[in-house]
Image (cartoon, rainbow, N blue to C red; front, side):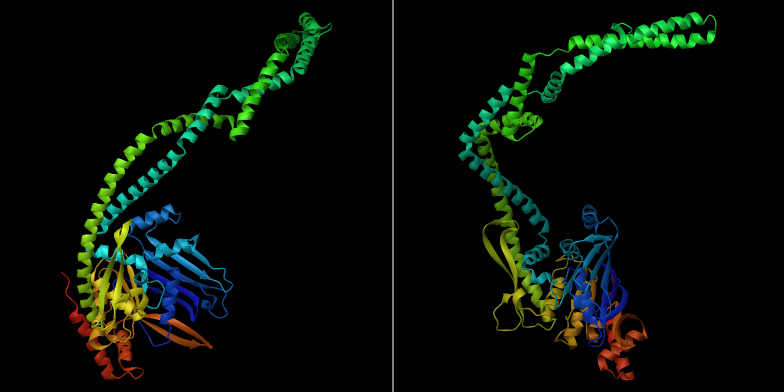
Length: 560
């Protein structure tokens, strides 16, 4: 539910913060006080269009923040976490409107897109009134409302899983049939590739080994020359380094009899001589081993040309060519056994299609029965809401082929007045009528949607007296299932609220300000009296206000 709303520099609102509670919250105030502005601000949280004129004159930006309690929505929290917005019990949504059009959206502190905001908040809150956030005006939602009313949500979900499976099978089968038309040509092409790659006898790591061997042969002359020069310099030539080291080591060894200190350097020099001789012999061996073989070099070049040619032809690396050769075998096997696989798939598809038709028929039967029950329940509820002559129906239109939700689509139809032909609800209902219809739906079909915060604007437009009391009672009833916020001008509606707020406008230093004040006790009675008697609040209107509140409390059903 919506727990907190912060508004700054939005239209005539300088700064406003209100904490809402569960149950029935009502907002009242004089015409022009700014109630509709608060609704406009909430509409931004639902993904409404931001306009530069929303920014208060003289300010650089307008900010609207809303906090929602998600403690009872683990699935939504998991989806938020998967989208990178964290897994918190409180959801913070923030919109910043800039006069230049550089608007920003934040979800739990992370920058977000409008396409991410709308699907999220539309699952938490809805406005019923003169706003675009109307689930009733979205025809695609109507069938889901009927299904929840009929208790068919699980059956429809099960049907949807079978439908998705059938669609995949149909797609696979179509792919196989299309492949069959080109199967022979494709098979010949794959078999040619298989023979070509098999003839090449590619080996993992072979290209790297050949390149290394080619580098060795291309530099063999220099390698031999350097190795032989090292052998000659270190050991073989007259006056070689090893010969000089041996002479000096011998002299030091003799002189160590004179000075024992020289025995250490003599020993170290003798060890160095052994290492140097070992290096010299290794260089001689290496020079004898490295030999230029024109035949082998030609063989390496031919092999590298084969690999390079295949790489160019297939557009792959040597390693990818090996993987491709393995893949070809599987593709050839698929083509050889395509007939058997297609036949197996056709049999499974026929079974699943029969299951799909059976489930669709069961759902259709229950939908038609539920649509009639919903019609009766809705017309009964609408009669209490000053729409006594209205007729309401859920029309179901059969589909030629099974769709993702069954064998029909559905749409709500309404005739607001006697003698009129029912027309699609989304075409004809006014804001006030939409609010009352949704109110009736929430009473006739508890749980008809998953929204946890319902905002009713203009629900009392054009009604009064008994109908107004009925509206207030119904709002109080549905507030037991979902948080309700209602903007109203009627004291009969306000009297049913659990929490009462007054929107008021003030002028200070030539500027207009709107504020929202929670009312309790006599403050609430005074506001109710104002709603009853206008600007002139008398003791009589105060007493009348108390009576309305007391009557509302008395009419409230006892818990348990």
